[in-house]
Length: 94
Image (cartoon, rainbow, N blue to C red):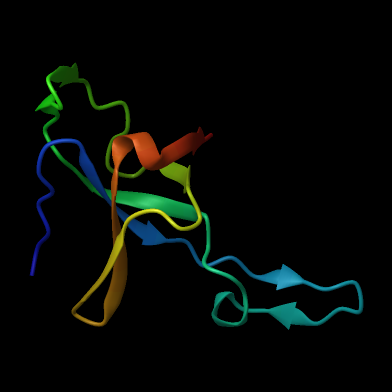
C-alpha cells in the first residue's frame, strides 16, 4: 500500500536511533520516548492552505526533526508512519 499525502502534509518514518547510557547499556528506540528524528517518505503537493500559498520545502529522503507530539500516527504493512503538516517540521538535518 502506498501513502500519498494531500496539500501541505508530509509522511514521516521514524529513524531508529540507538543510545548508550553512561554505564554502557544500549537503549533501542522501543525503550525510549517517541523519536523526533524521522525520514521523509512522501510529500504533498502544497497549494492553497488556509487561504495562503504553501510551498513545500522538504523532499523525499530528507532527515528531519518534527515536534514530539505532532501529527497522526498510522500503521501500514506493519510499518509505523506519522503524518504531519509541513509547519510541524522544525528542522532539516544535514
